[in-house]
Image (tube, rainbow, N blue to C red; front, side, top):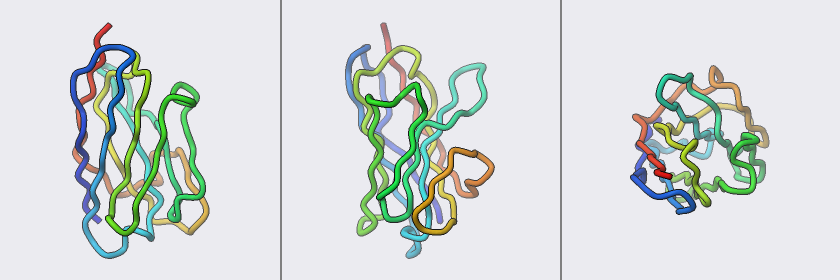
Length: 125
């Protein structure tokens, strides 16, 4: 599966953004999906994940209550709604796919074997 992330931009603190990730291929529903981010000078870190059917989600503590992940398997899309953005959310955001069984989602980066190119999110104070 090939992934294309979009929706990043430059916003002020407190604003919202919605990231989108479009997947190619006919087996999108066979993948759990995740969002990761990499801030300047830092390692890439898990942000959120969603199981194949969308019933199970997972969030990093730093984004709980502010970010919401969702997916539309009919459209081969996964989304990350980001609200109340903070300067520390500034990073390149990547979507990733994990070919796993249904009903599970993991935060472990090494499980994800397909990655998009990243979209920049910059939050000014």
